Amino acid sequence: MSTRRGLVAAGAGVLVAGCGAPEPIAPDAELLAGVLAWERALVKAYGRIPGRAGHELAARARDHAAWLVRSGSRSAAEPARAAGDPLEAALALQRRSMRACVTAVGLVREPASRALVAEILTAGAQHAAILLGRLGRDPLETAFPDGRAA
Amino acid sequence: MRVTRRAALAVAALLLARPADAAGAQAEDTAAALLELIAREQAADFAYRAAGAPRFGRLAQHAAEHARALRAHLESVGRPPPAAPGAPGDLGPAAARVASAGDDAAAIALEQELVAVCAAALDRLYDPSSKRTAATIMAGHGQHLVVLHRDPLQALG
Figure 1 (cartoon, each protein chain N blue to C red):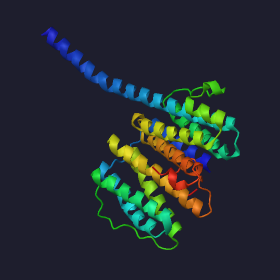
Figure 2 (figure 1 turned 135 degrees about the vertical axis):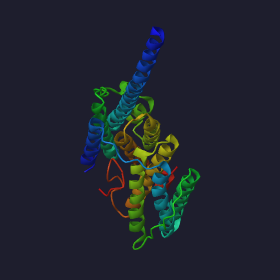
Figure 3 (figure 1 turned 90 degrees about the horizontal axis):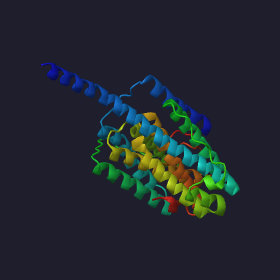
Figure 4 (figure 1 turned 30 degrees about the vertical axis):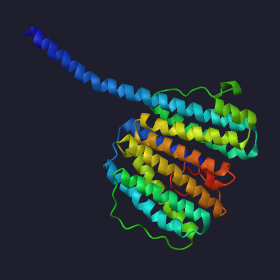
């Protein structure tokens, strides 16, 4: 699965480089706002997980939201609400945030914005691995954690 | 008049040449960054396999997948891949420690280095697809840090 995803990602790179097909580019603030909305939702979702893990992960999501706001991002979107099993709900939201990061990291123009979303993506992958472990699943489900379920 | 026209033509030629030079420099920098990333991933693959610990098997497999995906990007800019390491002497210090010591502390140091190398490469890569591949590889090394720590929460920066 991971191998196929890696090759597909690599193939997409070849196609983009070969055809020069441009991707529509939104302003950095708009791309970061997509991440901010999910990180705010994650603060609430991780707050539903009892114990040290929930506390630590909520704190990280809060940090990410603060960094994004400091970088100029604004999001008026109401954070998505987590429902159902706290671990599963948090994992689903974490993956949404990771997908927003992957979209943004290829398109943002400012190096500081790119570094920020790459760091939030990496932290998100770590959070997902922790959640997967607690759910009794493989924490290393893919070599290319991009928010898509393996 | 002749001189003025010649000068104008020279300036025009320079203006036309600059974007091509810039594009060439971008391609060079992208290729150099990809070569660096591939070499690091190949070294990590070699080191984890040389260490021989079963718990490093997945990490070696992921490193090999990373190198394979990056090689496809490198081919798209018309460059051949770097040679894979053939002996521990071909490795950098962090990978060499994994190959020789084979403990989790060495692996954690290597994975932290790989995260930093990916982060540094992002701005040198030209197209969105290669940036995304490098970013998800960086995230993959972040996940490795989680499984290498006895307390996964300690892996969080």
